Amino acid sequence: MRRGFPLLCLLLSLSACGTPDPRQSSLATQGQTDTSAPLQTTQQISINAPADKIWALLANPQAWPGWNPSIAQTSAPGILQPGSLFSYNADGMSIHAAVREFIPSQALAWTGDVLNFHAIQTWTLTPQPGGVTLVRTSESVSGFLIGLFFSQARLERDDRTWLKNLKAAAALP
Image (cartoon, rainbow, N blue to C red; front, side, top):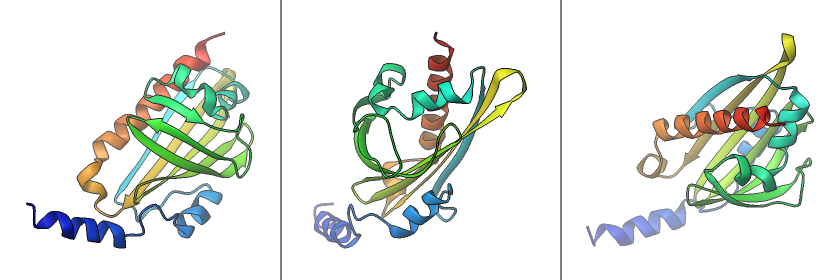
């Protein structure tokens, strides 16, 4: 075990640790995730609230900890805008993110990096009859040895939790 540790450190240092992936930025700008990533999920939920109300919750990272218990803290320059840089701590991981797609009350996408892992998360809000909004989030995560640190089941659970918490927050007056 001890002999393998220096090799692991060398491999991590050669894996472009923390270097943003330009391909991911390009995909996120188009509202797409990385279909070649080892971890991918798409989840959706119908929320009985207008898209503008849901957008106000999503586009304000400073308020996320108030309605999403898995977010411990955020650092953002206020309401998100195109190109905004922000960070948030989710389940003990400090994620550094950049807004790549921004269409108010319709679509939001960001790329996020933690260590040598790279994620794309997209959100689409689609108004439905009766004041309901269909909220869909897709996420892809890639990076060297991602499977050792994060699972497909956890990614799916985390995104379902985001959506359930968003629905509960949107139900508040």
